[in-house]
Length: 556
DNA sequence: AATCTCCACAACCGCCGTCGG
DNA sequence: GCCGACGGCGGTTGTGGAGAT
Image 1 (cartoon, rainbow, N blue to C red):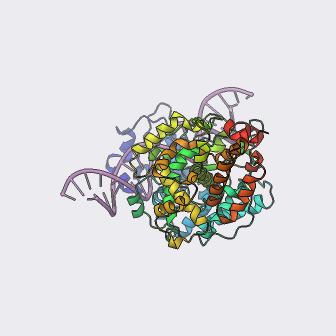
Image 2: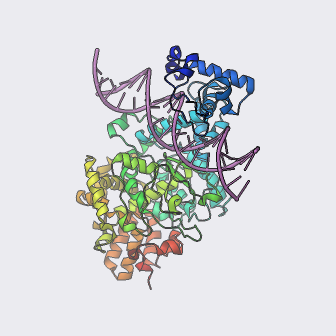
Image 3: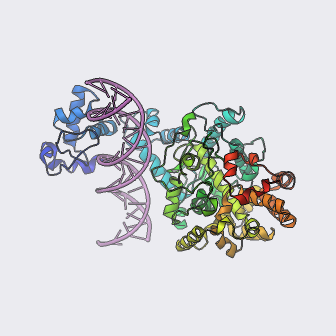
């Protein structure tokens, strides 16, 4: 299509274009033309011919000389871009082949948004082409509520990571997102996957069940690869749901009916809100404190992309997303700044999560690139949502607690403006609880609609976990509990405060949510020794930055 | 048939790293 | 070491076309 509209202009351009009124002010970055006004906009075939001729004679490079010597009133940058993307020989035109698509997906899982590097693996394709392809694909899949990465790619990336970081327990280099401070993330990831085993046939057996897995258990069936934030209404999503990966989507949709809803709700809304609720300050000295599956330099979620590979050890270098929100202040969980809660804003947030001030930006900003980070972010989101759903007792036992900031009310109000029949958290929680059910062994094939399941299920749960519509509506203002640790923190608090009965109820409730295989483990932890911050992978600094309400249980 | 919405693409913009003076 | 030019890269925007309403 590229040339159709351009060629249309040929009549008025060609040679005359250099003198044409279409020449615009054209400071093209650094490629100035010495006061000459450079043309912008679509290239014409005449310009192309000039450029091709010039490159044939002089070769590539020295692009600013093109303008000087060829009469092209284009800046060097523009010339280079035109040549690289459209004129250079051996360029492949047309749609990506299936093989190319697969390769792009795999490369993106490894590289993130390193389009140029990806292009190097795709002869004849340009970075711009790949970038455009990926971006449109992301949008499409986001709308469809589908995971960005097909399961095989997820597993491949995870296996690679697992083999290098989990098994060996050491960082292995630039492709290893599991940096020194990964805080049991491997467990988070893989246990999340494990939790999905009941749901998705392609999830392999994953060994090791650790404490960190508790967070993930029951959160599982939000597909580990999925983290997109659909921004359109369900009808449209349904319309646009056709599988990008034939066979895969079908499996997800048919076998995991809650998946789509979960993504819609958790990712759309809960994540948008919860995402701000992890401002755990990294240890300023060590830069190591990035709890709950957040990696230094991890590229999560900008553009819905993640990088499993970058940045490497120098990851402390911050790459801020282009869209940045002011981050919640350090230790400011209770008064997190609510982003514009409109879906678009949530989408924007997901794509460019708010950096925390200073170093924590990376730790809190899932940014573009990489599958593993996507998984981690999703795991984090899920754990947040889950904890959120279970936090009622926590909140009830701490009146006037940190959750009651006005910001939350704003969030709630804004959510209501969204016009969705369900409150954001209500639906999220509903899905979430359904996920818990599935993770506990319920057959998805027999799953009634999520709401039905949830309701029936929840009604059997202790009152603390029942999400009545009222509670669901309340949920957005309890975002403090979205912190993955809040649930247990409240648990600890209650232990320390002697709320034994509530404690027992809460423990049971959580245990129910966790599923059978984790129930005992959790109970042992909850009822036994107090769970230390180390169990959550928090270093002292991060721990110290937790609200006092969460630390009380650590007091003697 | 008109309008709207979304998609795909080209091109631009800004930032950053490199290099030479 | 500083500075400017240059090139590369990633993100974003603008626009025409196609399909849906």
